[in-house]
Each structure stands twice: as C-alpha cells, then as structure tokens.
Image: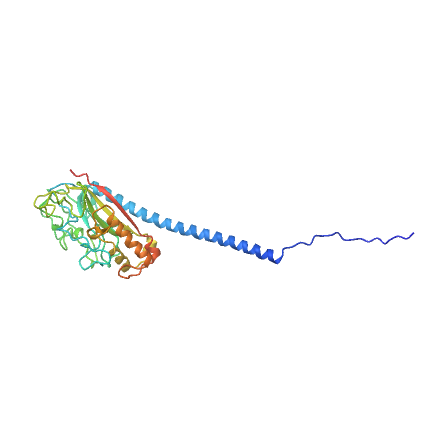
Length: 353
C-alpha cells in the first residue's frame, strides 16, 4: 500500500495594509483638522482679547462716569455762587472749537474743564484731613512733562464754609480757603500761582501740579461736555438764549446760576492700557485733536444741535484711524490699537429749580 507523504501546511494569514493613496488622503484629512482647530483657537483668542479690551474700557468708563454722577448730584446749585463751566465768556478750558483735521493750537487745551462747589468731601491741601464741602474739578492733563499727560484727573480740594478768618493768603497754595460767594469767582482765586490755579488752568508746560488732583481715568484721553436745556435744546451755552437774549454770562445782567440747565451731557474717549502702550503720546494727542469740540462737530451736514452728533463725529474719527492707520495730520496710529478705542456718554440730571 502506497501512502502519500504527510505535508504540513502553515496556517494562512491575511497580508493587508494601507496603500500609498490611502496614507496620503488620511494625512491630508488630519492636516485639515489640525488647521481647522488652530483657526478656531486663533479666532477664540482674538475674540477673547477684544472682549478683554472692551471690558477694560467699559470698566474704566463706568468708574469715571459713576464718580461724576456722585459729584454732579452733590453740586451746590445756587444763584449766589460761581461755576467754572463752558460758556461764551469767562472760560478757556477747551479747544475753542477745534475740529476734524484742525490740530489743537497754542493756548487751546483740547479737552474741556469744569470746576464747581460740591457738598462732597474733599481734602485740605496741608493736612490731608477731610472737609464736608469741596471745590471739584475735572480735566484731561495737557502737560507732556507729567506722568498724568492725556489722562483724566479729578480735583477734590477741601474748603471751609464762609465766616472763617479773612486773613487767608490767596497766594499760598496750601492755605485752607473758604467757599466763596458772588461777586467773588472761582477764576478770581485761580490766577497763576494762587490758591485754585489748577482748577481753571491746564498749562502744557507744567512740571508740577496741585496735589489735590488725582488721576481718576488713566485710560480717558478726551473729555467734552455740553448742556441739555429745559426747553429741550442741546447747546454749549448754559442758559436759554431765546428767553434771555441779553444774558452774556451766568451773572450778567442777572445771576441765574444753572436755572435753565436740565442736564449736563458728558462724552469721553477711552483706550485700554494695552492698546495705549502701542500709540505714542504725540499720535494720541493728534487723534484726540481729530475729535471735534461740540461747537463744530457736524451732524448730517449741520452744526451740532442734536443729541449724539458730537459722539458720532468722534466715532468717525476713530474709524478713519482704523482704516488708514493714521490721523488727519498723518500721525501713525496702529489700526489694532485704534479699534480698541470706545466712546461713552452719559446725561447727568441736575434737578435744578
């Protein structure tokens, strides 16, 4: 019997793998997924960064405007005391109508100033003790020589009630001075070198300033205000010129105080600290100059007589800097920094009688 030799066969195994085409397709898909995730992460980072900048400016604006609300609520509203506020006479605290493309000239301060008596507490210059009545003032510092340049400052100078000794020295800035009644004015005690000099002056060459000032808005570089009258008009004159055609100031021919003013409207321009570091002081100054005063801000081709006209012009100046990367006088402004600038406004009801 013939038998076949026994043959042992190794078990069969599947020999399967990726083809070169499949590997290439898989690699491309993975690369696309990685790119998509990276773009999403980049977009999220950009959105977060912009959101953080807006939070910074929102927070700064809220703090400043809330502080102003307290001060205006405590303002002494009388017809027998003086106010250092915007008007056709006895006021030099703003740019006198500088507008878009018109850089602030010599003697012009760019932003507004305001000073008034308040029932809010202030500090005596010499001792630092609190006083129940004060001289409150706001300004954007105009001196490149000071660290507070192009930053919003607030003064809260403690005063005494009238009736104290008349031996106070007007020329001594540390003298504790009383609140004054007309015919004495705030500017009358604010000549150069005198007690309240910095309340109405903002010299660009200053190397020192009144210690009663403090930086309240380090990111606020533009400050302007105007009035909403009880007749519904919006103006930079603090009385109704149609009802008082002969009035030339708050005290002439009669003392009227703020009788005709319903509210004071305040507008501020704010830039976050990170963006501020990207812009030179000179460029930021020129950009602030492009933000027109209320006097000549344009709304729909007409002089500014409507609520929001000036603020709209400020936004136009900012958008122009974003799109061109420069101011109207060709000062360079990084578009990313300019895009972080935000404009804020608020109306403060004076509740005058």
